[in-house]
Image 1: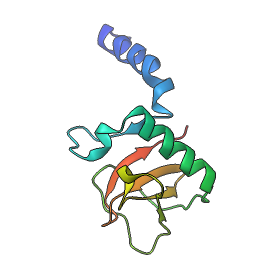
Image 2 (image 1 turned 180 degrees about the horizontal axis):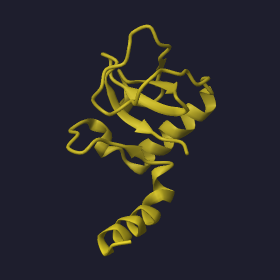
Image 3 (image 1 turned 135 degrees about the vertical axis):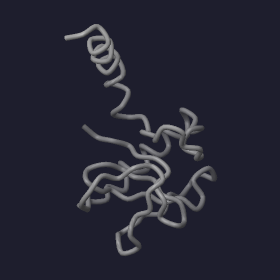
Image 4 (image 1 turned 90 degrees about the vertical axis):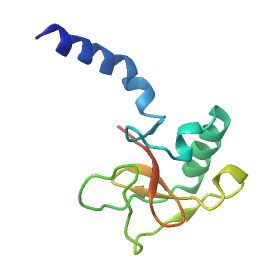
Length: 111
């Protein structure tokens, strides 16, 4: 294995534990998800766990910035002013945060 490949592998191993709980954002994304505070993330994670929405399955990969179909089941995020107008959907075993137009603004990947 080349040195750059080894460095990449080590980097991925180092950040893998944080990827399970942090929103995954597309490179260059300029949405509000990039500025979630620790308190906001804790609220969001707890809220989603408490509501326990079943996972829906849709084909293809979901990425930040993509727009999801309107016929899916979305859930309002209530109880925190930061998430006013945002909703979440449990899809393909990931929690996806969308804006009012069903545009993906953050993805909580669960491995």
